[in-house]
Image 1 (tube, helix red, strand yellow):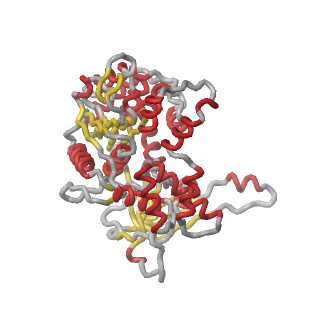
Image 2 (cartoon, helix red, strand yellow):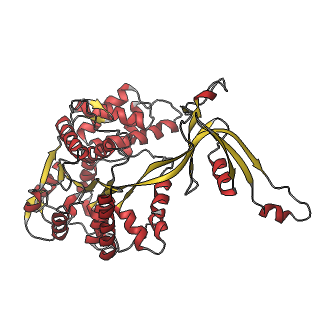
Length: 472
């Protein structure tokens, strides 16, 4: 339990996110009646697919769809991964969301079934409840007695521990507490001062700053935007509170299966986890559930490019979804009727028919010209690129004629070209320049057809094959 508390506390860190392909997405963009808005929370178009994902979201929150699987199928570049990411953002931070590509299974040192098992258990959360002794009150005064340094023997003064006193009050009482070196260090780390409302965990010594007391709101003429004012706590200073820790089953597995335990989560070297360890953990979590100390949170496991899985993986998924603690499985693919990997049989999306029968299927449609323009506008704002209206019209035309992904890639490249000429707004000339520097798929294919004889190990196709390659 101590390791789980350390893991839960280590997550309370500030996250710095880079600008990625889907960093502009904040949610599914649905209103209160579960209808999809045209443009909302970074999502554009795909109203039927987003509405279907919204219904899935509601079922997940109500706990009525655990152990089910959803397939998001559509043409390349139609926002399948975006819908999965939007679903994850809408679920919130407490609901576990694990994401992987199917091809990862074949590049890991682990066996395929072990990698899938770990992915499944990453997507299953455990909300563990425990009662803790909490001291909660408003800081009246902090006094720290520092040891007097000695010129003759400075090392002895460094070895001496700091001591101090902390005066806390509630609306009903006031008490003075003796402080040791560990608690003084924790208070200094949180920058606690007189007038702050704090909570002290007696068992772990953790200090949590609740905010600034409303009674001290007039001490300063101006305060920062992140300053939070709270009322002075009432009742007794020492209370018993229910503390909740949220971890995943995989994290509990790692803590209990490796000699380095907690540190293995950061090194990533988890290795194979024995089935006996998992059985013991499942038994213990089951006991906690019966005692009311824990609650299972079925999360979401997203597997992209699912057609890359072979017949063995699909057989494993069939069985894993029948487990009572299985998460919601969301898979995506852009393939049509193709071979099931590991067999000579063809099937829709490269998925076996018996597994397809388990799926709720959501389809996506190609974006219209207007929707491509709106997506490019959102990406320009996300990447902080100022672009003229004429340049956006040209970029939209390129997106329609080539692909949306190619047009998005040109945004940053055009911004760099603009910086090189010391401009502030991206113009048509910048778009034209990077369009000439970077080829799209169609122009690259045409180039290969013209100069195929100059490449090594080239298989020269017939004219009909060449035409098909150009059309694709």
